Length: 125
Image 1 (cartoon, helix red, strand yellow):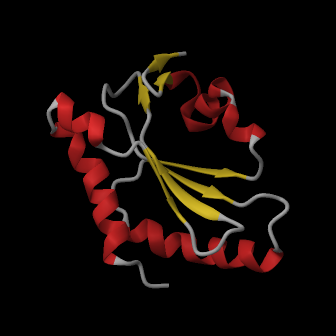
Image 2: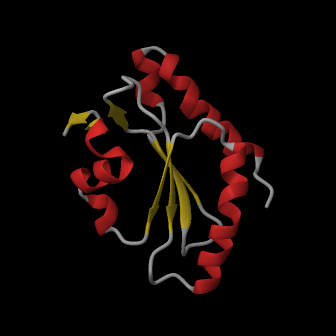
């Protein structure tokens, strides 16, 4: 699977903003979805901070709900590595199959790094 230049640019912009002024940071994306079809998607999420790092790390999320057709899940699963190779610098990866896995901040923080995660979306845990 070929990764478009647009995806790489969005990813690069999300990485670069960390050195920007506070005004520029407010304009930046904290989450971006990449979809091949309506059933599944990939996302980049930039909204958590760890004890080791005062900066927020990018998370690559693979969303494949149980209700999605098997063919869609297979296409996304087989394309995931090609996309991740182009998006260098991703420190965490998360696969979610239902909304309950990501809606609660404590559960999401646990999946992202457990007790090392100290804030999510700028809010302390």
